[in-house]
Image 1 (cartoon, rainbow, N blue to C red):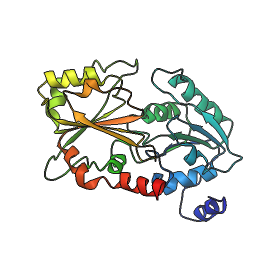
Image 2: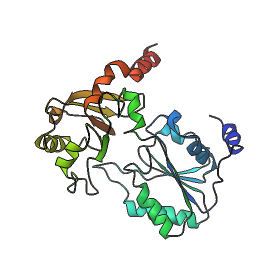
Image 3: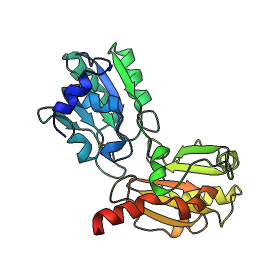
Image 4: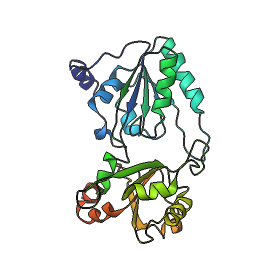
Length: 270
């Protein structure tokens, strides 16, 4: 997209990106088209972008070429910047009077540690704005034909993370309570510990034959889907990440609602 598009958006009723401020922006689940207009506006107004590993190159390419980009991605099992260092960098850049865009995959407040970063900015007296994004584990699952709620199957859904700040299975989770809380569980960052999580859920009473779906690279052309059951989940191997795990009856709707796979096939094969 040309930079003239940014000037058109600048004429819209968007808040100004003030010098010395930080915007925490959700980039959505992957595809550039799923980024919000306000996030797109921020890309054109920022002076520096501090982005996560999950922000796709196609989204970063929407920013003008002169905008500085700093990679601050954290991926499980790989060398990653410390969260404290990232936060300190945001504060330092803002105090230099720069317009700082903190660009995060999905939504900043959905297992994105945006609340921690915003809290640190507030304590440091740095002006900030939160720009929500489409979460991979919420709206992004529509690209896999998975409605997280459906009137015929569930009136509740539970979101949880598959690891804590140490990288281990969350020790503070009441798994029996989680197992009973909702028919549908949506698990972020759970692939690495899926055997242990499945064991806990089975012990807490979830059915062995409950359908389980793993969606990798949500809303990207490389999106992949694996369907199995809770009991067979520990047998899964070599699942690409990032991935979202969905357990529960909504998996059955994929038979009719899996529109994106067909679209990708048409685009690739004609």
